[in-house]
Image 1 (cartoon, rainbow, N blue to C red):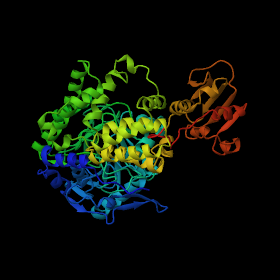
Image 2 (image 1 turned 90 degrees about the vertical axis):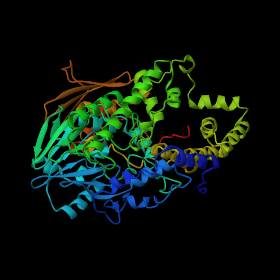
Image 3 (image 1 turned 90 degrees about the horizontal axis):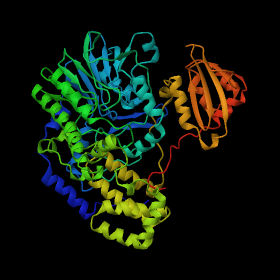
Image 4 (image 1 turned 180 degrees about the vertical axis):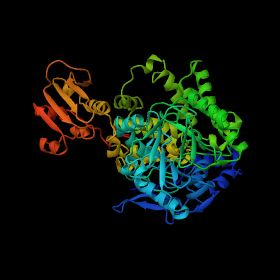
Length: 629
C-alpha cells in the first residue's frame, strides 16, 4: 500500500485561502457552547461489543488539536473539533445530554422519579454506554419513556441499550414517535437498505483511518458506530401539533414536522424547562436535502415553513434549543437568531434554485452560480459540513424536474462503460488521456482530472496508472472539501481504487428492523428481490393465513412480478402458509420445511411452491462496485 500523499500546492493554497479570507475564525462562541455544562467524560471513550469488537472510539480523534493541517479544509477541521467534544453535559438543570458517543446525541429529561430519554443513538452498545455515564453521575433513575424524534436509525437503533422489549410490553416504559415512524424507519432500511448502507460506508468514511490524511469527521457528527442496531415499536404515535403529554411530571408539547429532515419527524418543547428539542430540523450545519448515501429528496420549502412555525410557537419563550446532533444554543435572543438563520437558509436556497430553474438553468449550473447572502454565508451554523450548498441545489432541481435536464442530448446517453470507452478513444487512447490528465493535475484542475480519468478507469479497470492517478486526485479533492461527507466519499474512493472494496461496515437493515415489517411491507420487500427475467415463465400462487390477526393474502408470481391481494380470490392457491405475523418473515430465508415448522410456519398443498418462490430471490450485493465498473 502506498504512503498517503501530502496536499499539493493548489490544495494548500485553497485551504490557506479559506483560513485567511473567507470565514470568521475568531468567533469562538461555538467552542464555549460545546464545552458548556460538562459534568464528566468517559475515559477512555471507546465502546466494545460483547465479542470485544470496538464499535465506537471517539479517542481516535485526539489528533484534532491546534491549527488545521494542509490536508484538511480549515472550516471542516473546526467543525470536527467541535463534534469531537464528548461527555455528559447539563443543558439546564434537569436536562442532560450525552454527546460524542455516536453520530447523534441522546438526551435525558428528569421527571418526578425517573427520566425521559430523547433519541437513543445508533447502536445498542453505545446506547448502553451513554445510559451508564448518565447514571454514574445522576443516579439510578428508572426510564419512564423513550422519545424517537424521527425515523432515521441513529435516533432509535440504540434503544435496547436503554430499555427492554419486556419493559415496554409491561407498560412500565412508553415509547413516543411521530405518525408514520415505523413504516418509514423500516422501509428506508429494507427496501433500498443494501444500496444505502454500502454507500453510507463511503459517506461516513467507516473504513478510513482516522487522521489528518483520512477521516476527520462527517460534519453532522464524527461517524457512525458499528454495533447492533435495535428497534422497539412505538406505543404512542403523535399526530398533531400542539399535542401535549405528561410523563413522570415531564411536560412535552409536540410540533409535527413531516417530510422535513425525515419523512416522519417532530420537534418537542419542554415548557417547564423553556427548552426546545429541534430534533434534526435545526442543527449547526446546512443539512442534507439529498443525503449522499441516497434517500427520498427532502422538501426545503416545507422545512423552512416548519421552522417558521417553530419560531411562532416557541421562539418568544424558549431559553435554550438543543438538537439530535451538535451542541445547544442558550439565551432567547440567540435561540431566535439561530432558528431564524436556519429557517432562512432552507427558504433562500429553495426559492433561488426555483428562480434560476425557471430561467432555464440546470442543476449543475445553478449549483455553480448560487451564492448565499453574507449573513448566512458567514453564519457557522449555515455552512455545508453535511449537506453542501452544491449538492443540495441539485437535489432541489431533482425534486421538481427529475434527472432529465431538458437537453435531448442527455435523454439517451450511453451507460458508463460504453461512454467511457468512447471518451478514451476520442482522447487518442489511454496514454494520451493520461498525459492530458497529469497536466491538469499539476495545474490543480482536480475536478477535470476526476472526470476524464474516471472514464479511463471504467474503460480499462485494470489500468494501474489510471487507478493511481484517480486515487491521487480524489485525495486532493478530499483534502480541500469543507463538507465532511464529500471528503469521506473522495477518500473512500481512493481507498477502494488502491485496496479493493471494503464492503458495508454498518448495516441498519437489522433483524429488529426486519421484524417490524408488516405483511404488506414484507411482500413488497420480496417483490423487490425477484429476479424478473428468471421468473418470466413462473406462475404460482400462495395463500398466507395469519392466525394471530386473522388476515389473509394471496401471493401470485407471474410475468416476473410478485403481487399480493387481501381480497377474497377465486379457486385454491398452489400452496397455503399458516403462521403468525411475527414468524412470517422467515419464509424469505429459503429454509427447509422442517425448520419452517420449528419456526411456527405450516406449509400445505404443493410444498415445493415456496422453494420455487424463494429460488427466484436475488438479494442485493453488499460489496457492489462504486469507483470501478
